[in-house]
Length: 417
Image (spheres, rainbow, N blue to C red):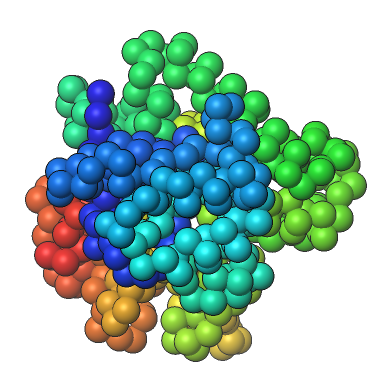
């Protein structure tokens, strides 16, 4: 079963021969290797590139372990680049390569070499490494399958597909399992044996149980505002454990570094400033989040919000949590200051959209409640409500675009209509 990943393939194609190192990042098992070694390689072959001008090395493969030594790799590459024709060097899991910054910088100085690499953590995109690249890196960030990609190979109805996607997420390897038991076992094993073990090993974490407890707390609170202080208090009250805010901050950084979670910061729309704390955390793959909780806590409202957040990030938006401050008075004339929330403030260049995720809107009262904060932004940017079930996308009497989750996810231009 081949899933077309045209979003990312087209980005790679558009960046060919630009003189930069094309760096494909993303959580482990999201399809980076397949993108590079199958889809992109197939594109190159279709363009008439000879096989001997495509050099591919997966550094995590046992047979290529010797190439993790740059003093072995460089003579090998020099031998492979035998003529003046354009050569495409595809390197997978490049963070395993010793002195990879120097190796990559050396390669892109060659006029007949176009370099593409993948990596599963953000370490090799740190500030120090970016400085080493001196502006020569060009990142393509890859996500697990979005709902549209998932449905392109799913044979059932949209509703059945949605139920499956909400439960098991979009890691491509999940599609290999037909029965629920296989999907569940795979996701749980992957989380324990790959993601957590990788983070613990890389950062030399001594107390693995603390990290796992934090993951459980974040998993059960997706889309909720929190910060290290609140999380520390939760540890004390629920887990009867004391863990410092500094340690929690460090663990969260590790989880984001591994692309397991992402965050949305609060933004004061009228004040035009960021509010650093608290923030919201979302899982890059909802199936991994469910596996972390042993598939017990399955609320469609929060799951839908997480999936919308991921889709917006896939579409290239910077996503914040909107805050609208409203000043009023109570019945005694005392001043009241309220903060109303907009789920997502989405920015890309000059474009901005305000989006509310509302699982159900059964009546006009609920509609007015959901759109109240949208109507108080004080600007003319498009305002959108995404709900589980809705008729065809339409503008209501307040000028708010209302659409179903399916219309949003299955139409890449849904926000533009």
